Every structure is written in structure tokens, then in C-alpha cells.
Length: 562
Image: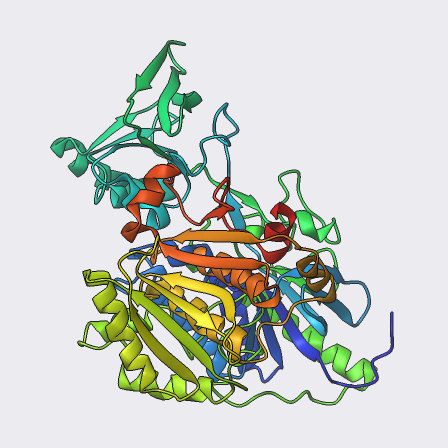
């Protein structure tokens, strides 16, 4: 292990994961005047951000996951914590100085908190993988709208299944809950909510039941079930297609740790009462740890426990190695990513909230006065100009795009707007981004980039007119190898939290290789594409109008498919 020669890129505490546990740890560690960095590969806030209603967090009568975790982040930033969207690929945890390797750079830390959470569990029944994105889904918030007026099965008996099942009543004409046990496994107060929907016929519950297999042609149209008590099997068929949402618990996201800390048989991190792992200076927090209750309140408790327990260890390392106090950025510091908007891989921070464009539109504007000033700061970092050529017809969506662009035009002279009437284009309306020399960047948007896609739009502009998102040498070499004309369509929903990362990844590839075009489509406005490819889940990637991929993909994963 190398000797520390400087404090550059050295942190007192690095927190891997920015869900409630990681955010809580960041608040406590930063408040203790330590230099703190939070690394997150996907979305600040974690899985809880897709939760539409939180009513059991002490002191907060009612909120949602997005708002609650956003306020936690602001608290952490106000104490000086730094945030960056980067994927941790490896760690060296032995010794006084820990080395953290990401897809972009290397960091050093005196102490580490691992709060990487868990991913939705797949059940593995025949047909599950085949019909993922064509009827089988795992996120009601992302994909619920694709099942408007359809019948939907919800598999699972825990809190998430009940919550998401009730949420899906907004879209589906009927919900059938498939519960393996004899009763729901969540709190009775939560399970009782289902009874009201049973009375109206919106929800039917089948206990002692499991999915045996699913099938169909282009979309999910067949499912077989088994009654665990009687042993009898029964089938459900609907040629027009139906949905099946799976909420069967989670799998800890620990494979990448390569057993550097002790794990149990299920892959959860083993910790003591203070959340210390088997390695000195390394702590676990949240759903990635062995625990009886996985709720927001227990996650934030874990984060606070881990951070405060880590304080003494960090202090002792400072003393033993003679490391001076590390400088902490001032209150409200911004992300350590490329330009204070997003880190590498892309996500929102407190500078540009994901819903900012939507909130502004509620006031009769697309860009509010507050957002106007923040965007001006962003555009000042551009080194050249970018031209947006909008191809518009007479439809309402074209009218919205024109209104949005005219507002954007007032923010900066670094973005030029050209409006063209076009009724003959294949996918109209569209917004195409052009480089300063007049060449096409390969990046286009089909729809108003609101909701979670606002940042991906701003980052696209940055990739064309600024330094752009950083990529590793390895990824850059792969991008250069794409020698044939390649079209990538990314189908999104503005409510999807996973879609922006895919959009930014694909469009970054396009910005660096003239042979690649990357187009974002707001799927609700392009039903012809949805029907043609039987898309019932986002994000969906269509390569050269033939290869179809569902789910979140990184730049590396997309490149492997080209």
C-alpha cells in the first residue's frame, strides 16, 4: 500500500451508495467536520425515490421518496458533503488508507461506509426473462402507464407488493395479487389497505399461490399458477396481453465486493451493533446489511450509527499518520462531477432538480426565474455554441417544444434555435443537436425533455458544446471501434428514474463517434413504435431497428451490443 504524500483526492470518509442510509451517514460525518464524498452509480436517493407515498417516517406526516431524500441531500451538502455519480468498480480496504476505484478515477479514504442497497429479486420461472419489458415488469412507477385499462398480476406479499399493487389501480382495470404465503408479510395496517380495493373489485388476492410459467407471442398473454395447498394448477390467457409486476424482495448488491468484507450466505454484509464490518475502518449501512426490518427509518439509523462509530477510527488514523485536517468545501457545495450538474454517468443534484421543468410549467412557464439563473451559470461553462434544429408539425407536442425552445433561447447565446416546419419526417416532432461547425452531433430528442429527462437534455448540450462527460480510456477505445452506421433509439417515460442514465450513455457515445446516432423518444407520444416493438417497459433500447434491449444499461453494456 502506498504512503500518503498529499491530501489531494483524499477523503476522511467515502460513502458508497446514496440511498437513505448513505445520505444519513453523509449528514452525520460531514456535520462532524470531516471531508466526505458520496459516490452513487445511479440515482441520488436510491430505491425509495420511486415510492409515491411515505406516511410512517417519524415527524413527517406525509411525503414521497423523491422529496424526502432530496431534503437529506441538501442537508448533507449544507454541511459540506460532496456528491458524484460514478460507479465504484473495486476497492482496496486493508490498511489505514483505503483505495476506491471508480469507472472514472481513483480516490483514497481513511474510512468507508458501504450503503449500496439491494436490487429487485427475479423469481426465475420459465418465461420471466423472455417477457421482461413485454409484460413482465419490476417498477410500477416507471411502467404502470403502459398497462392502462389492462389486467395486471402483482406477485409478492410484502410491503412493496401491497404499495405498488395499490398504486397500479390508477392504471389497470383489475389487479390480482399472487401471494405465496397464507397472508401478507407486511404490517397489518398496510395490508388492511387492500381490503378497501377488494370491496370495489379493483383488487383480488390469491394466497398460497405461485407463478409456474408465463408465455405468449409478442407480448405476455399466458400465465400458469399453482395452488400450494391443493396442488392444483390453473391458467390465465388473454390474447390482447396483460401485465405481471414482480415484487418478491431484494438481492443485496454485494457481488462486486469480491468478499473483501464478511458476507452471509445470502450475500448481506455482516456487521456488529455499530455497523462495523470485518475490516477496520469499513462500515455497512442500510438494506445491504443483515437486519430484520428494511425501512427508511432503519436505513437512516444505520447511516447515523455507522458514521458516528467511524468518527473515532478516522480521528485515530489522522493522529497515527500525521495527516493534517482535510479541507471541506463550503456550504451548499456542488457535485464533484464535470460541471456542477452531474457526475460521470449522470444524475441530478441540487443545482437542477429532475422535476424542475415540470414545476416551472405549473406556473405557465417551462423555465422558472430560479431555473433561468441556474442555467445561465451552466451555459457559461460551454466552450462553443450548439444549434438545436427543431422539426415541427402542427400538433400540440410541436407547440410545446417550440414554447420550450423559445424560453431556452432567452437564457444564453451559447444555444441557437432553428425552427423548421416538417410534416413529412418519419418521427416528427424532433430536436436535433448540431455542432458549432454545422455538423450533426448524432443526438436528437423526440418530445419535451421534462421530468427526469431534463438533466439528460442539458448534459447532451454540454457534450456537444462543452468538455462533455468524462469517459475512461478503455471506454473511449471501444467507442472508436464502432465503424458502421448505428442508430440507437432510447424509449423513455418521463417518470422513469432509470431512463436518464441510458439516454446520457447512448448520447455520449454518439457525441464521440460520427457513426452513431442516439435518439430519445417520450414513448407516450410515439405509440406506433410502442406497438411495433411491443414495448411495455422502459428504458427500452432499439439498435438499428432490430435488436431490442430492456432495462438500465451503461456505456460499456451498450457498446457490447453494437
